[in-house]
Length: 145
Image (spheres, rainbow, N blue to C red):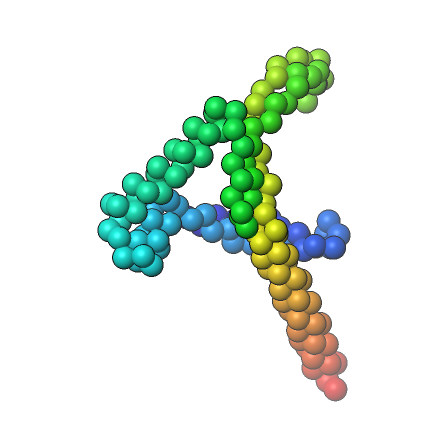
């Protein structure tokens, strides 16, 4: 599944927004990839993947915390009740407590994302330099030099 999103280069200003393609990987694609890599059928692999997801959900619902080394930590956190405002009317509203799933990425994931971020910044700088060169060339041609 592919959708478009708006991104921002790290360290850039609000005016430096760009369109980026966001690719959402489906469970079916994960199953297919794992199945091909380990030699199980897609049906067998789908069962394993689904049981893994079910175990994560059940552990969280029972109030547990899931620590997956080099990946991250899932846990349930309680959001306290609070007073808020309806943005349309400005009226005060009461927001009851709720429980949310949080995820904190592990070190390996953080490092991989930072590498991706550094590559994106480097590519943007190269593209910007190329764009400046092209503009300078076209400006020079338009003046007859």
